[in-house]
Length: 527
Image 1 (cartoon, rainbow, N blue to C red):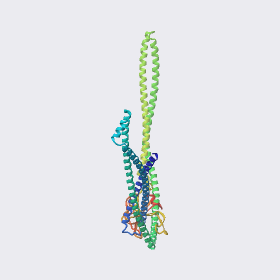
Image 2 (cartoon, rainbow, N blue to C red):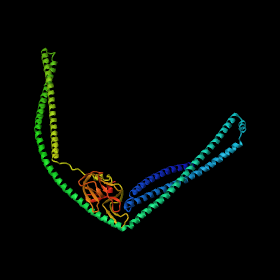
Image 3 (cartoon, rainbow, N blue to C red):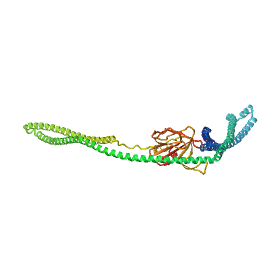
Image 4 (cartoon, rainbow, N blue to C red):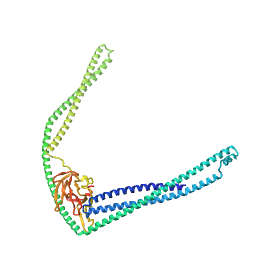
């Protein structure tokens, strides 16, 4: 029983994970086929153009690679289905054995029931009981036996149904496998046909090797000449930028010097204006402090006088009974005490008011000091602004590394740096950027905000646009026409020019990024 449960769990888990894996492979194949469809559409667009191009060859190679991935995934899917068929057959065999056992047991039950059939036999079986208890037990036994027969019949029916379901699933898996094998044959034929196409293209390249090599070398010479022009233009731009920077630095330093003198004069004027106010406030503060001190002394003397008089009044009150005459004196002493207390209270109130005035004067003085400092700072800022002293605005080209879009979307046929030619292995290319093959009519877009530095016309009729982005430059070469002019301010996405036809019949943009006088790999900057 435990083995059976383990086997069932194993099949269930295999079916679950196998289903997931198959679904994943099918999704991958759907995506790969979508990419193949896109490549076919791109190739269809270029059918009217020369097929003898690196771009066309790259697309064919890419398509073969994708088809081979589809074939590999289908092979994996086929193996999963074969494993599924094998495990399903094991389960069918096990269920057949169980069904045979169930049918055999049920047949034995039916035979026994047949031997003891008939209501008379049942009645005799019950009536032959020794007592009522035994008779009731025999009735229950007959009922249980009948239920047992029904249960066994239901088990056989359920097992047969499950078995049929497994057989149906196996048959479906077999059909899926047959379909996959058919598709694989088609895929193999397609891959073989596309490999022949690739071989045909390579042979065509070889057939025209002399002419194409000559044209390629001429193109390389033109590229080298263009590189020299670009280097010269960038060097001029750097020299002009440095001279301008030095000029700006000197002008800025002079502005700062003059502005500081003016600011000092303005601050001195504010200082003079506020000095008198400060002196008046200081005098007022001194008077308030002196008055507060005097009033405090008066208050303290009166308080002492009050205490002395209170003491005398208390002594006089104690002697009232001794001398009636002294009673009058005691009353007078009490009156004097009350008057002294009133004077002391008034003096204390005056002292508090004087202290408050002194505190207000100190606060006014502090406010005046802060106001004086704020006015001087504001005056200095105003003077600096009036004299044109401002902070320099930084360049954000480097900050956007990896976030900028491509100047045009297509197939990258040539990468940055020293690379062997994709077809002619004896030729090594030195690329200062990347080459992007596109469909006819594609427009190159600027990748970042900047200023058009120069528009250069080459001997072959193509045009190159150089855009300055602070310390960086972007180059858009092999344009048939331009949509931007020198000194024009451009933004990311601004149309630069129409991408022109290359010597091999493909439409290719030569895109470069320079950090000062050094070219860098554009693929690290755009995506």
